[in-house]
Image 1: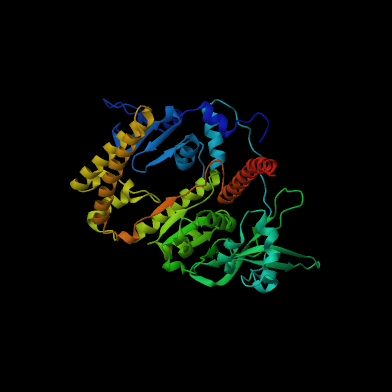
Image 2: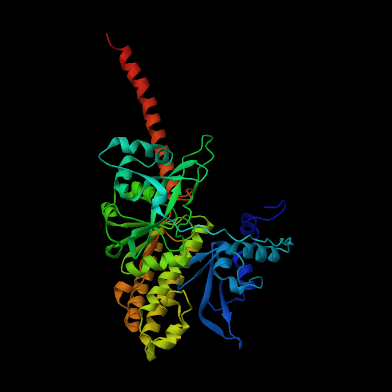
Length: 462
């Protein structure tokens, strides 16, 4: 970052969500009796566009859209709705767009960027497992396990977790043309529809002596667009899994398992997926095509990239669900009103039958009441939970009615949950290391407390 440039923290501190909503074309909704601000879009004739409303909360720092049950700050709102802003151009990065919009709203000039010329990549031959010497982890042979110690020790991943996933990692040694060779911890990548063929490796190197980190990447020639690390301690086939857990790295998947397997014995039967970094559309569609009835657990990192990955995965889920619906004449108008990559409940409610419109109205009223109670700071937590339960009940009723109207099989409807590590951990491996450090601190404290007591007892003996 250049000296003097504003950061995301500056934007969040100096702008509020109303500034961004107004710039995006929204107008304050002046409906009588409203206890907190809401913003709506108007059509060319000045009439309110149905189902396009945001409710402002947290003293102007965030907003909610009732249909989505999702909160945005100024950063995530711009990234989620880039086409609302004058600076948007096809291909512009979401971070660049946020900088351009926020700097303009703050009357802060932005320096032009030099055009970069990217050299074409040299041709790389396809991945071939025969180019590597492979060392396997054998749960019955301690000698084979010792070589893995440097790769897992600094990550806090214990032997029991290594036993659980031992079929899904190895040490891979590549011999270079100059005679040098190097060894990495390797997580084999496969294509979901053909899990028997290894199409690449997600690689992790030994930690450096200075503690500055270690190599991470994918083996040369890997099929990064389609290949994923797919693992199940119980060897559950992908198509038979009831729970799919999504991660950005295999280390995070193993850390999550270690953190939760004691309290969730069904984790052994689940399938863990690592995209090895930025998830591609082909990776997501490949898994979803085989696992739509399963519950998808989105466990990506909590940084801005992870938030974007989670959003992209949800959009692909919605697209896959949409593809299973037969577009009959009575459904067509409503389905056409649902934007690409959006949930089925985000269409024009006015195009639904009367009973469904009434059901949605009950849900929206309950939603607004719950949001008002949360943001007021005057309501007891038990009252907020009760209102939230009422809201969720109305939503379930509406969703069930919508599912029947669209002829959507319950098993093919979207089922996912966003799981995040405990703050301030960015990913699951960070949380595991933090938990281990906390346990170590507790053990040291207990040892210090016991030591004087033992010493005192020794003095009284004769």
